[in-house]
Length: 255
Image 1 (cartoon, rainbow, N blue to C red):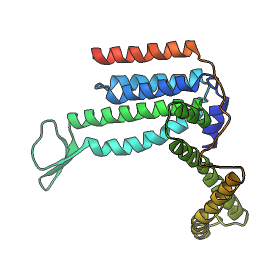
Image 2: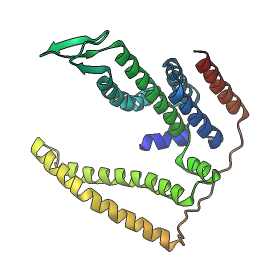
Image 3: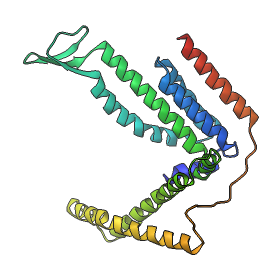
Image 4: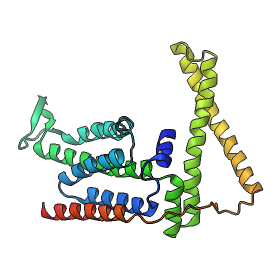
């Protein structure tokens, strides 16, 4: 999580207007979801990876580590979609038969599983492009400019902030336990993990109360006001994004 935030502030697309990146990522994500053929999401996966690694300068190894997370979940999920259990004969069903029940796959099931897999991974690639190239404060600025309710934007901001508070608290507790040999054996590891889970909520709650107290002392009136950065529009990026999405739409309509 810390690395994602670090790359969002240091990538080569950092100075591109955040509205352009948000629009590009969301429009491309929508195309990936509505495309009837799996070819379109496959193209989106490849080109989004190329844009994130080649254009934005995100290390390929780090990107692959990130994309393996949804990839693993999707493989497990679509495997269940591809499998078919039936006691009736079906065209193309191949598998293992036991007590008149057949567990196997059909061409239709494999096609559906592959389609869902590519659509989901394409959507994940779009969101990774956005999160790795655009700091959260800039995304929140775009949401404010879109006139989203201030309460909703503040909730997103505080939730994002407390993800880091939670991770920092876990790291502090784990470091303190490890320095006292709390994970020297399997038995002590379970014991230490139980204490970590028990103390995590209490410490995080205290940190949240301290943050709220600090906000109140600085005149918090149910709306977080921050200094917003001003970015010029990047016409080369905008033109390339429009051309790319139009090409995807044309390809989608012709296939």
